[in-house]
Image (cartoon, rainbow, N blue to C red; front, side, top):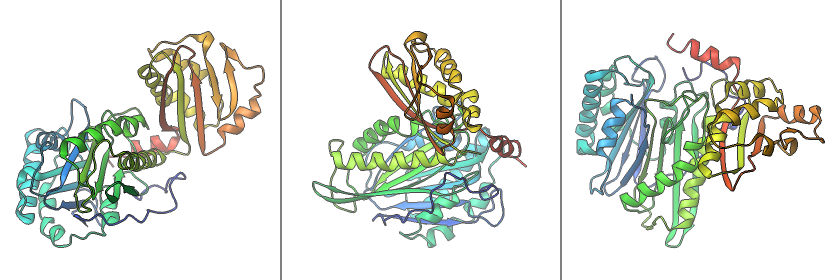
Length: 409
């Protein structure tokens, strides 16, 4: 469905020029998994000695691909690694057939790349509940392997899109104590976005050298502050996968204590997470929700997600209505500790409400002016403690309904 809807008004002007990451090559092809004449399968191959980490959906109905990846992760390996992703079909809720599709694809990739099957990771995204025509994918593996190139990250990003209106990429180059390190990644995601791990499909690569256990620890920590802080529609996918590969090609060793590397990786992850929200199905507003003064950070996150996921809040934003009463409602229903008479609410820098009532200085036209902006910040202070959290979301428009009502047609 990529390209069937107009490009998001919140999209960046162009796909960024990603630096070449030594030790990883990409390819993409048209396999016709669901749609004709579009890229829908990508392959990434990492050199021997690469470390691979990942986080995945906690959905109880996660796909066969996710289960296979989870079983394979862990430990360092002298072998390289491969990641194959298809769009158009999620291979979820397909029973034994789904497991067979994963095995067939992994076997085909292993045979063409010379990698052990235990180092082949897959992901599928698209419609749930339909058998994956994996023969269309395996028929393209030789072509993919033959066309691998270091500078094909953008076409790989295009191949994993579903309802996305633009491919998403981000990168960083950072000076670490041992020398320069590069990071580059791409993501897909537009709907069914309420991560409970990472989000959608995200693939990030670095030429840093780092032990697998350290790479996993860094990824899990940063995931909690980036991808796990976005929501488009409150629905957690069966296929969410975030994988991070470190090739070591730079020769620069990093650890979880290498602040420059960790900060740069967080910046890349945050950028990609924000792009997913900016491409939220039907979105016209990018919304930051800041909650402070909660009894704990966990309570702050609960309040923030309640606000960000509220259909009433999101439709008010779409209609540019500064309806602060809906913010009060969302805080009250969240289940986290709150006191009506201690709440304060701001839209941007406009104080809207405080001490359980509308602020004396508030003017409706000031609140309405904030709502007309393409980027909106909602700040709520709970007044109970030092807990704080920030999450990112978008508005809910008629476009979301249109896209999802027609999704399988």
